[in-house]
Image (cartoon, rainbow over all chains, first blue to last red; front, side, top):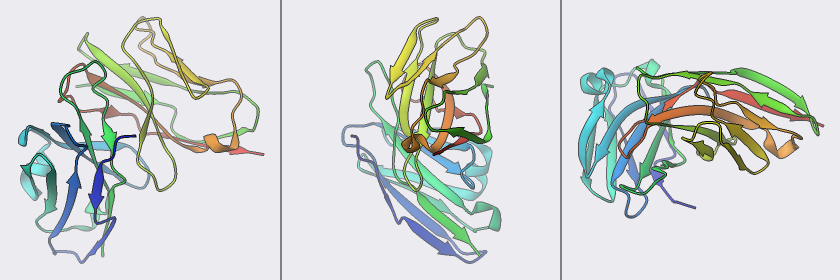
Length: 115
Length: 114
């Protein structure tokens, strides 16, 4: 099985604080995605990196989040000012460029609680 | 944009009986792949099935699905569920090619009862 690592697994922040979570994609994967999952409901796409460059993101990420992939082995997603609505499971996935399946492998997620 | 509509909410099935989770979609693209992901409690979503071929049955772990482009559907079925099948199931699609985000349905929580 592919292994995408996410840290921390749990994060608790007060409203207004900054939050940061990290993702280590599967070795050799060049595409990295972030998704938000609220209360075991639908997974919402946030941002996509290819070869460490952000190529697609939703408006919310542009406005309130900071996301970077400083190396092929580490990406981070940050929230500049946490709000209660940001409480969710943040899932990182990666996939390999090329091939037929383009399967995305997910990490276990960082569960953010904003109080 | 792309959209996925699937059986959502709670689905309860007795062990040994069949189950079908519906999934229909809308997309403007022709080169699209379709997925079923399963997420067990406190675990990451894992790929269960994938297809991009019209009218071809895909099977894995006792589950199967057939993509029908004529009806824009990719329903998930299993003839005899097990207790271990209890999980969240998501239907998703993406444009073919790396870098294409997954568009998910809202998910269905399958609970298999003894």
